[in-house]
Image: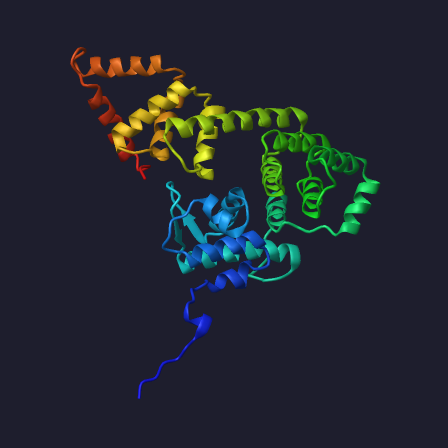
Length: 345
């Protein structure tokens, strides 16, 4: 006799690492869990964050934030092309223990050896990533008793054109209470978010956390950062066309662009030149390769392509053939220098 068991919905299952429940279920947000489950369920498929967001009913920006949440905890790792992979069991447990040390000092839970002193910024970061929920009664009391809170709430209602939803109220409270940003700095941050059409609570919280960690706590610093962010946003849009990229840049790639345009103050001509050298050297777009080239130019004080041309001429003369030394050979030398540095990916 032949036997067959019908498992129903249990016939099609996928695995979830136990560390997710054991260590992170308390601090992971709803979107973090949804995104991770979706990725695990579709482990062999390739999706853009926008597609995942459409399937889950959330913004693509929230998808990227949730992926970043798991990458930071070394549950997932991401390479420069955006490909995700699982972290080895031992690595994940080490990351979980580090997280639990933080919680141990805040709550007394999950003891791992003797307690260690941690900085206020780390505590604040963990608290923000938990996205604390302020009860409506507490919010009402704060607004009634705090002139800064009252002003910010009314200002946000004016910008939204309606009363704030609880999630939006919660975000304003987080900015004031947990990031400890001064009211005037919080006002600049909120206005910036509306100006660039990124007034979603998740983006506001992320930006507030970045400002808090970077100690942007004065009007001057806030205005300077807003100018940098606007410069970065414009650069991202231009470089997507320049690099012929259709998908969104990763956070790591945006951080590199931020450095190129805001810290190094390179213009588009310099970026284009580095891009062409990258294509000639690797045959594809490689942010680490481009970053290496631009770091080298910055260290030499180069500000425009004329200085790069002069360096090429100097290399030609050094090789004893000013007229016929092939530019491709120079680019090959740059490529070999990059490979030998051990930074290629």
